Image 1 (cartoon, one colour):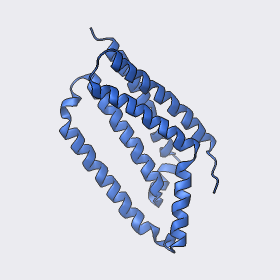
Image 2 (image 1 turned 180 degrees about the vertical axis):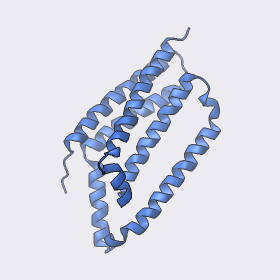
Image 3 (image 1 turned 120 degrees about the vertical axis):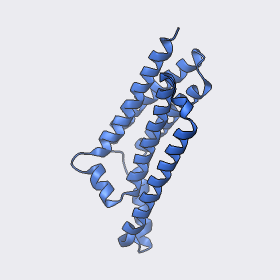
Image 4 (image 1 turned 30 degrees about the vertical axis):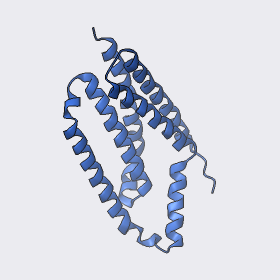
Length: 181
């Protein structure tokens, strides 16, 4: 099975490269200006995440996984019943992510003090939201597909909007850190 990346996937990969560069810039700034180590870890981790997303897009991994899952379901004669377990998977994913997000914010609420910290935490939330979007696209449940790939193309707005927010966050972080006395 050979699936080629679409033109939109190639454009997204190019944009992801800009996001990774912004995250590296913020991480280098955090290192050079003696910011808390967890800031540097977040920014460099974000860069690695977006570099992985570039490979994900260029090698059409999402399309390959979705096609492979469909093939497995067809071979197991479970394709027609896929809606039953897809809805359970979506419920589990959304519940798990809500618990993780609430727990992380509750246990790290101190990190929300100060704009540099808040921007760093917002970036982690953005990466988590992008990861959730990817997982939901993989599950490919009918009503989710209708929302994500329908007339409004919420999939692309969410994907590019989150990515744009992260790259703007990196630039804002650098501005905040460099502006400190």
